[in-house]
Length: 140
Length: 140
DNA sequence: TAACTACTTTATAATTATTCTAAAGTACGT
DNA sequence: ACGTACTTTAGAATAATTATAAAGTAGTTA
Image (cartoon, rainbow over all chains, first blue to last red; front, top):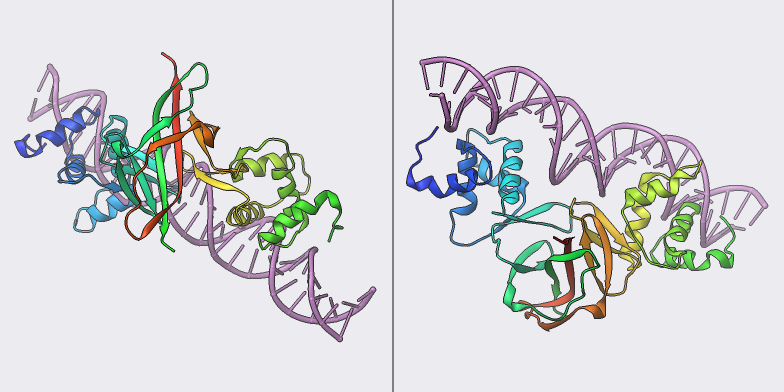
């Protein structure tokens, strides 16, 4: 398909290492997700709406879901559940925590939270990761 | 409706203070949830199946959802999202944390986790609560 | 207690997020 | 350029949840 120009190399590499062929649609999605200064959070539905808004040739829902899932399985995205039972994905894959502020999600750098005490894992198990959610509300 | 015998008084009181009339169905659901030694976790679907299994006169889905929502809004249940984007409710409303072990949820007493450092809330906001999820995996 | 009214229950339809399906299209090794 | 396995797509299917509206009930009032 499209030439493997340098512009897309890193996105194509992400797709390949996620086990996906770099199709036109997938490269565009991956570029949209990772070609930016700051990491961000998104739901698949929001991603779809946002990308398809300005397109005449819409990318299908299934392709969004497939691509996001593969990127997540490969470790390029982190997934977490929102209050309203939808999956939210984070392009920030470094270990970190979150503020939840009425549906808005804000990153907390890992070093902002440290533990004095943590429980042992039950026997036969070990800790895979520790995630903290700090729920916020308005003052007074 | 049914006499306000002592047997059901505490369940009826829970319903009343949740803004619900103590109907037969609601009292039965509330009794099922709170008439036990240990707290537990459930999804609405699981609750419904479990209670309706042994009943000839099934309680409708809507009644389960309505009752659980009201009890949760009144603070008698805590809600959290599972990985698979379904709502899980906890009859343990004391502050505590959770192990997530492949779909199984295990309580962690609040005092098993203490913090050395926590971030400030953004300006205009304050911390409502802090929830920790420790994800487990099998050894080696 | 009888009657009334607002709140409930219920079956079923609607909705939302997500996954599946199968036909038409495309990447890429040969 | 060819062929095959992988993709895209629209639309159907599924799962969890919420909405609807008709029939039933709680609780107040007479």
